[in-house]
Length: 438
Image 1 (tube, rainbow, N blue to C red):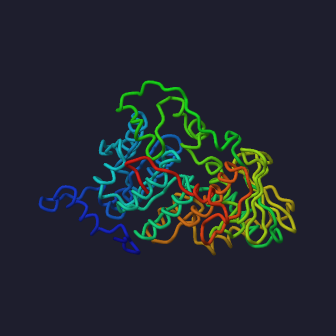
Image 2 (spheres, rainbow, N blue to C red):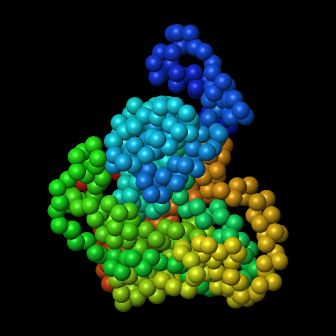
Image 3 (cartoon, one colour):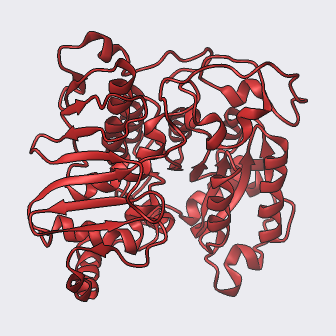
């Protein structure tokens, strides 16, 4: 069932929730000041009711942001790790001054029980992103899902199809698409102020030096299930024995082929930015040239129009850098830059004009989370929508496959398959451990 357009958060739906939750319409109902929207806060009937799945690391930061939005009400949190589950509940309850936040270990229980939610924050490890997003959308939720949005080409396409079939809003957490210091050089590239683009460069993560790395750490005794459900932590990926060394965030599990997206893990930060600049978020490069190494350093890919996307480990003063090079100049930016580095510093004088034009053209806030919430209400597509996620992640996955097979590849972005390479085409998907399925 598709959600209605316009004010999707309606009083009628709020009352319907009350009935579903416990037959409250059969008993006297007292409207509290909180429900009415005291202190300038929207009434409960107009708030976006949210749950959260995977709330450590990046997820805890996302949760804190949503908690400070007056038009959001977080009601439930889910994490397979006890300390993170308790920490998320504590943050939610402290924000609202009550103890109402419900906790879950298994996302399936949350999604089945909490029929009152409008949206889900998903910030699990890479291996869970697509599957969790698909389950959440099928359960009736719009989804803000951290990057990378998929582990394979097949997963990404499934996210696109699910969002379309169920009429859901989906935003991948590529927040730099909504940050002014990245938007400005991207707009310079898009509107021709750098001349005809010929090369874009994307910063890579030095931690991944071999995308095919997949060894096991030695088995250790599993913690009590109340502290860590190891089977659920692994989820859809092949089983391996527990070791605490996997639990240190993406810097720990992110270096293993089974558990992470390899080059895609970091490419999800930067490739989508490059493809926004080159106006190619509806496609992917058609050629992938093997660089002679397993890390992707110096790798060159080419779009159908001849523009090159080059992978780099250095060249910026911060992380997640991108550089756009055209016939009349270049622009470069990374995290921590207040303004882009430019071949022609005079272009900085156009900052206000460029950003004003951007705001008028896109009608988007310079805040990625807020863009998502605005789209939940309006039913507009977010800036990092399912297709943008999928096409930029396809670039990442094709690079992974090229590095794993150690040979050049050609890609058909219309058919979404490699040309003349059956082995590469088999790698567009991965086996999923039962009982999970996409």
